[in-house]
Image 1: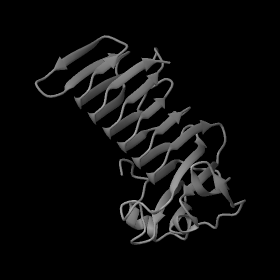
Image 2: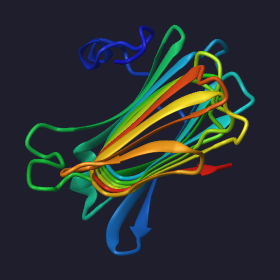
Image 3: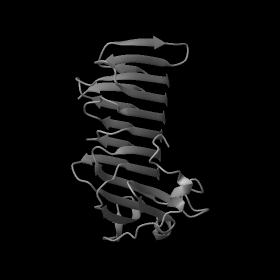
Amino acid sequence: MAYGGFMTAKSFLLLAVISLAGCVGVSSFGGHNVEARIHHALPAAGVRYVNVENVSGSIVIDGWNHSGVDVSALEYGSDQGALDRTHVSIGQNGSTVFVKTTYDSGGGFFFGHNGAQVDYTIHVPATASISVSNVSGPTTLKGLDGNLDVSEISGALDASLGRVAGTRNIHMSAISGHMTVRIARNSDARVDASTISGDVNLFFPSDTHQGSVGNAATGQLGKGAASMTLKTISGAIDVLPK
């Protein structure tokens, strides 16, 4: 992980998963046969790091002015068995909160596509450092003031980050998907963006390079105190004013 406060995935498995108090219901869901809704709040103060890992489904992370973390998850699949093979784990270890989707061996997304999808909506302290990994599905980030380390395999990535300044460090990457990042005009940051297949557009003056393979742009707002690195393999990168 990019931040020292985050533990490895292996360490996460050693944690006792916090019991999912709150309501879990099952009903019909559109083109899917069943769904389950999970809501869990971790009201503890002092949360500094949040680590979210998903395999199939959307992630929305919204910063708020509260000390705790609030997680809503929607699981949906073809049958009850798909939901039974899919697990949402929510845990806390000191100042770090983990939210993770796992599948039973032989029944997960990569083993016959017979697990359920999970859509997350997560409220976190605005100043927390966030680490996100999503395999298939869009990721949306907003109202966040801390460090970011975001990895998207297949899906759009949309981030609204306000003023990027100080020691803030932002790293976002995607294999396949359009990346859109909105930052304040009075940010104080250096931005390095590159893509192998796709356009790169920064709203402020930049040094743009178009190579035989890929495009890249480097620009700076203010004195460039903070750092922002954006990379895609296949997909455009747009940095827009907020």
